[in-house]
Length: 41
Image 1: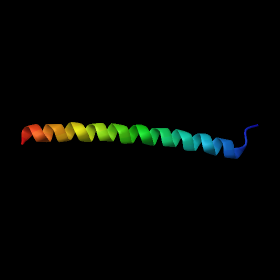
Image 2 (image 1 turned 120 degrees about the horizontal axis):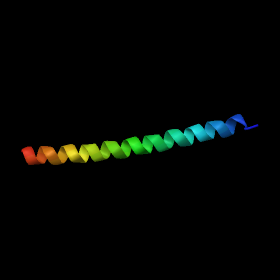
Image 3 (image 1 turned 90 degrees about the vertical axis):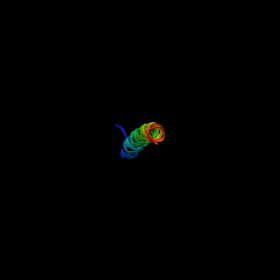
Image 4 (image 1 turned 90 degrees about the horizontal axis):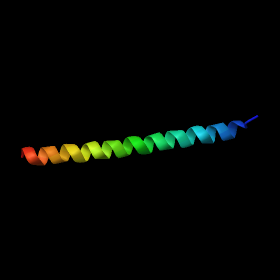
């Protein structure tokens, strides 16, 4: 059997990874929008 703490750690890892991915995507989108804005102005 897998201890509860191990499961919690795995979930935390998964959440951390997804948060990293989201923040990276968000930064990329922000850069893209900034580029478009600069071109427009």
